[in-house]
Image (cartoon, rainbow, N blue to C red; front, side, top):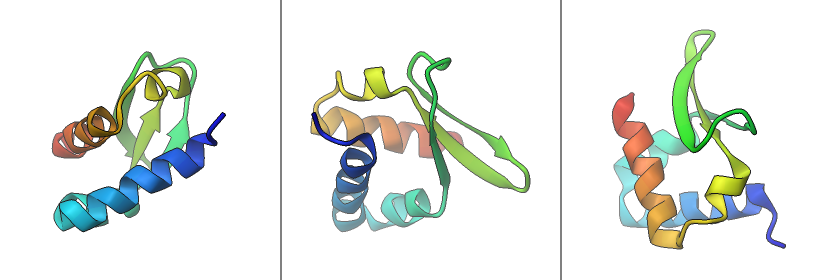
Length: 77
């Protein structure tokens, strides 16, 4: 099985190369994995924003869908 952090890092790297604005914004966020969240979401964490992802949901997605979910969540911020 692929490591969840390695998977997120790989998609983040692709996003940096393909869409630098979103990719650089993404790497500045705190990231966490949560089982109590059905999909993914962003929230305030202190004075920063945080990206939370459900691991089970993450691994049901294709690489393009993963990029799409990350961009979608970044657009909320």
